[in-house]
Amino acid sequence: MNKTSRIAAAFYHFATLPDFAEKKPPLEALCAAHDVSGTILLAAEGVNGTIAGAPGDVRAVLAWLRADPRLAALEHKESPAERAPFHRMKVRLKREIVTLGVAGLDPAANAGTYVEPGDWNALLADPELVLIDTRNEYEVAIGHFEGALDPGTASFRELPAWLDARPELRGRRVAMYCTGGIRCEKSTALLRSRGFDEVYHLKGGILKYLEAVPAEESRWRGECFVFDERVSVGHGLVQGPHTLCRSCRYPLSPEDRSSPQYEEGVSCPHCHERLDDDRRTRLSERQRQVDLAGKRGLRHVGARMESSSHPPNPRGE
Image (tube, rainbow, N blue to C red; front, top):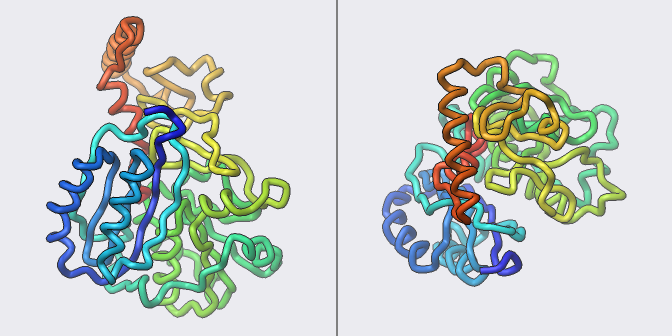
């Protein structure tokens, strides 16, 4: 399969699915039949996933999901994938499709007001608006909207405590954003459950904004971290320059890779000082095996699995 014939599709939809576990076997069989790889999470609150494969095969899986009337409005975002971004297919049953750890939220009924990407810049022009990035610190580090507050979280589950520690936000007009929309949709439901009245979120997330808004009109700065082997994308969803450190799984810019603390497969400026001798030795040996496989024209499976794993929370949690 050449690079123009493969796509990655990211999607989620909040819906009431008490029978979600029953969907796992037929969904696994369908993905196998169509040679689709990636991860799909199923929970009582809906579905969340990123999958890749040939366009017709990916769309067949999406059509199967939408055949359930409760998921008929499921939207997805497509982007080209130069190589297979996932090693295998996983369908998982979860308590939440994105883990916030707050019981009783209903994003399907109580999320904030959607703002279309074409209207987002006008909203950001309000000097009284509080703009909050709901993503984790390693994502914010490589790209963000101008003027956004960075909670500095290592996990999405830390966001409620961060919000609770800021009573000065109450009564303010708040907008939230994330990669594809799922985290900010759930975050705005959290704010509304706690008495916030004017709460907005970017429909389709950063990915839709980068797809729809011309670069010359953009308020976005940097690249957007994505949870597959592309690592980052820019405007037009073109693959960015970042790679992953195989030790700490932090996204690395070209500048990071030019650092004397960067050693391919072993360390980067974000983890160099934390590595003990034993781990450094094991990582060095693994990289030696990767290099040997490369010289033989083979892909080292261990390296692929490592590079497919992301900073602490591979589903954006």
